[in-house]
Length: 354
Ligand SMILES: Cc1cc2nc3c(=O)[nH]c(=O)nc-3n(C[C@H](O)[C@H](O)[C@H](O)COP(=O)(O)OP(=O)(O)OC[C@H]3O[C@@H](n4cnc5c(N)ncnc54)[C@H](O)[C@@H]3O)c2cc1C
Image (cartoon, rainbow, N blue to C red; front, side, top):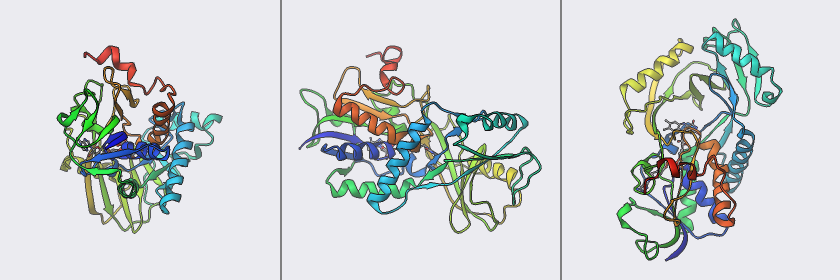
């Protein structure tokens, strides 16, 4: 069967790229092994102002507007909401965070993203805020699991999906590209952190980070806002909350741990000591496809122009993938040059040894 693109991986990256290419008239097949992936485990948070210095990255306005547009189009198409916009209370952990936030609060460029700031002393129900807090706007979270299952059904309906464990040895590059009965013009790898095992792209400087997340049930009245206290808390329906996420660069597996659970519960206790009784509903772990320079990995293999990668979205897939899917589709279909910051060409000289 002749097709345009064979996409390996149906996480958020493979799914949104495949949909973009299908919308532009391409024949696409997506292969996935059906295992729980980072996209399904992720909290899906979008938070334009990040870090202890409350920084807004240069491209955040563009990324935000493309992400919003993409998720609202998908909501219209599938007749259900996937992106929940909700303000975030950033609870300061030190005086220096309070000072840094104060500087941003007075900066006009940040006005669209920042709301009220409260100095120490102002209490909110059941929350300890000894250094004060700041309300952030334009934050929210993506319901990744229902979105990915709708997209899977969409691909299946278009005969564009196969469940399979893709074995790299089964691909034939010469004289023409083949995998099983499929002859694609190009193969695009969207395997998340498992790309570190990919014989053609394992040389890229990935820096995967494992994360664990808890879903809890409780009986306390919390504000209907996302909380960010170094970790984050997302309020769901029926007195449920999700809290996360740990960062572990050493143990790159998808097993949940007692240590991860305790770290998350202890951090929660610091800001909400009276949150009781708590029942553990779910405990999940997966690995973020982070990169050394914190930029995505997009582009073609230096020696094989019919194999490409679309990966490296780290801890910001929900914000970054919509814009980069469109950008890569433009490069593939119209020859638009890829931006230097995401193009893997930046690592050819330093990391590719042939
Ligand atoms: C704990 C945690 C919390 C996170 N929180 C957030 C957050 O709040 N906000 C945010 O934006 N991002 C968050 N992320 C990051 C987010 O998950 C990623 O940025 C994004 O989901 C990566 O998508 P992906 O498609 O590249 O990878 P994945 O979702 O991992 O998808 C890769 C897919 O490829 C498949 N695959 C791989 N190899 C093969 C093979 N050989 N054969 C067949 N199939 C294969 C896998 O099974 C998988 O389905 C979080 C991640 C974790 C782990």
